[in-house]
Length: 197
Image (tube, rainbow, N blue to C red; front, top):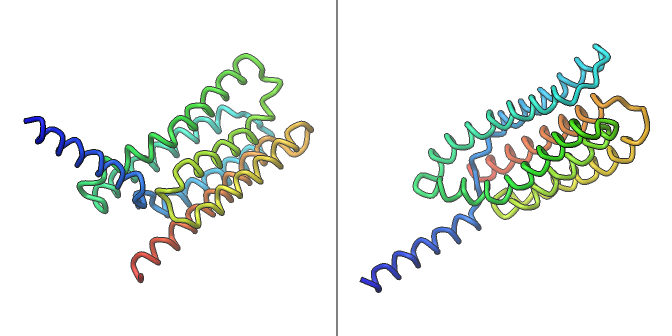
């Protein structure tokens, strides 16, 4: 019985290693592009309305996460079949701590130190870059471009966050809108390569 258990354990470990190094194809370019469009639309609306409410951005992030997550689960089950749960688990185990850190930071800063809230957009963008780097082994190799974009945008946004201009709506909308459109373009290109390659 020990040999059988050992063999099953080895098979499970090999499946986990395979999932950790396999390309996750659950992210739908169209849904990711839609989240970029939502970011640009919210930024434009806030700018025209003279609003700078980060709570609207937190709500949008939650809605977008649910949209992307729901589609990712459905696509992963369709494309990865028996490996879907392992691939989802491997990807989420690397990305969720970064997302949780961003959420905790946002809640604490807005609740306890709202005078520093202009720094949150840049910090969130840097964390997205860290998250992409964390799951890079499961994503198309070109996704490094998106990670670098988010690092550059986060750095610039942090630098601008210390001054009253531009508004928070643009510090959020432009980096996240353009960043998500870039991610969608990379995913689309990678899926085209897979179909033709």
